[in-house]
Image (cartoon, rainbow, N blue to C red; front, side, top):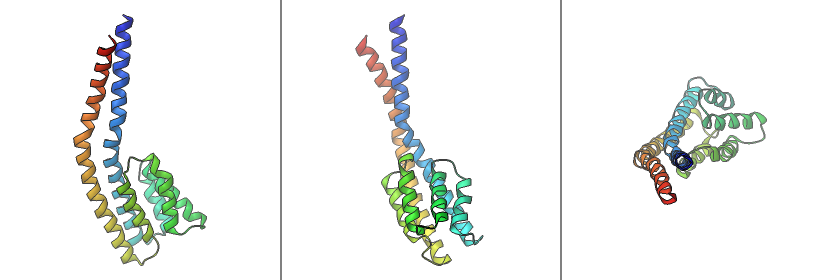
Length: 171
């Protein structure tokens, strides 16, 4: 009875580890979609609402889930402090929030390039930079969806199978 209970515990634990290892594969496309929605909302706030960047960032943050909302909240707070330029505030916010996300270096690089243009151009140029960032992120989203389809189920299955193997080796 004790062996069976131990085997069940091992199987559940190792399977859970497999699911946790597969989580970034499902989180990355979700977070990229959130970023796409955020940039589209930011574009609308800036272009059509003529909302200042600080307020626009707060409005966008209210529409998102964590950790992406944290990026815009932190960015808005840094802009309110007034000590940093929009570009450096964006860069600092990215560096702070990045460890909490499932985003890869490519997405962060796209966002850094976008951040370098924030607040430096007129409305039309700013809109073009936002659309460029959206286009690049859409490409990354397609890649993330392929990686998810290819790897997520495999990693989950490997967790379960590793648990079975461990049970067989210990019995």
